[in-house]
Amino acid sequence: MDLVTSTWTEPGNTATALLLLGRGTDPASERGVDCPGDLPAPSDPGLVERATAAKAALGDRVFVLGHHYQRDEVIQFADVTGDSFKLAREAAARPDAEFIVFCGVHFMAESADILTGPGQQVILPDLAAGCSMADMAVLGQVEAAWEQFTDLGIADDVVPVTYMNSSADIKGFVGRNNGVVCTSSNAKRALTWAFERGQKVFFLPDQHLGRNTAVLELGLELDDCVLYDPHKPNGGLTPEQLRDAKMILWRGHCSVHGRFTVDSVREVRERVPGVRVLVHPECKHEVVRAADEVGSTEYIIRALDAAPAGSAWAVGTELNLVRRMALAHPDKQIMFLDRTVCYCSTMNRIDLPHLVWALEELVAGRVPNRITVDPETAKYARLALDQMLALP
Ligand code: 13P
Ligand code: SF4
Image (cartoon, rainbow, N blue to C red; front, side, top):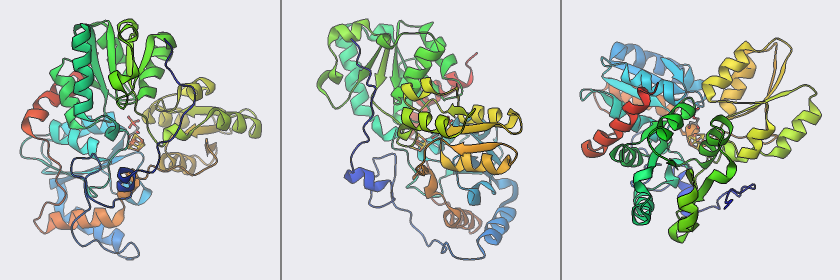
C-alpha cells in the first residue's frame, strides 16, 4: 500500500501558473487579481522616504506585518517579522490597529482578517501575492473526498488538519469537521492533538509537511501514509488503502521547497566539508532525511543565530531569508542549499512600490486591496484557527 513517491515532478506551465506572475484575473483563486491603482515606478528614488512618511502619518492606526520570505526593501517597514504562526498571533494581538498591512501572501491575510476584530481592515499590498500550494486544495475537491470517506464509513474516524497555507474555505471545512489548523512550527502538536481524537488524519494541502511530521516526529511508518490525488477518481486509492491508512495526505506541495533534492544535499557535503544541512519541513521526505536538521522558518533562524562562529550551513528554504541570515552572520558560512536561485515568486510580488501605494492610499482615506472572508466561512475557519492557538 505504499503510495509515497520518492521522486518529484514540477507541475507544467498552465494558464493558472501564469497568474503567479500577476497577469490575468481569477477571483476564485488564492492568487487573486491584478492590482488597481497607480503604482509608483520601481526606479523612483523617493520610495523609502515616501513609505516612511506615509507610515508616520498613519501612526498607530496601521500595523505592518512582514513574513520572513519578504524582500529586504519591504521587511525594513515591518513592525513585526515572523513565520505564519507568529504573524497570525501578532495580528490577533493588535486590536487597536485600524489597518493591518500584511506583507505576505493571500492566505495569511485571510487568516489575519478572521482573527482580527470587525473594526479592523486587512490589506494585501498586491492581490497577486497568492500561494500555489494553497491553490492545490479547492473546497469542492476536499468535500468530494470527505463524501467518499463518509460512504466508506470512515469519516467518523478521521480528523482533518490543514496547514495554515490553505484558503479560508479549506480552514472553514476543517473547522466544520472538528479539526485544527497547523503551521510548520506546531505541526507535531497539532497531529498529536488530532490522533488523540481520531484514528486517522486527513492532512491538507502539503503532503511533505504531513509526511515528515507523521514519520519523523510521531514515529509512524511511511506505509501508514497514503497520497490522495484529487485529480484521480476516488483520489487514486482503493477503499482498503483508505481504511488501512493512518495519514491521508493531500497531493499538494510547495513549488519553492519542492525544488531541493538529495543531490543538492550530496553536492554541498562534497563541496563544503563539515557543513550542516538545515531544511524546512515543506521539503521532500528524502531531502529531510538526508539533512541534519529540519524546522520551521523560526526554528531555522534560531538555529543559525545560535550556531558557533566559523560553522558552515546549507539552508533549504526561501532565498530572501537565507540571504538575510548570511548577511546578519558574516562570521558563519551560511549558504543556499541549491545552486539555482529560488525565491517564492508570489511572496516577491509585494515590493516597495506596492507598499508605498497601499500606505499612501490609506493616508488619502481610501482602503486598497482589502481582504475579507465571508462571515459563515470565517466562523468555522476561526474555530480551527482558535483550536491551533489553544494547542497545548
Ligand atoms: P512558515 O511561515 O510556517 O515557516 O511557512 C513557510 C511558508 O512557506 C510560508 O508560505
Ligand atoms: Fe506558498 Fe511555498 Fe511560497 Fe510559501 S514559499 S507562499 S508555501 S509557494
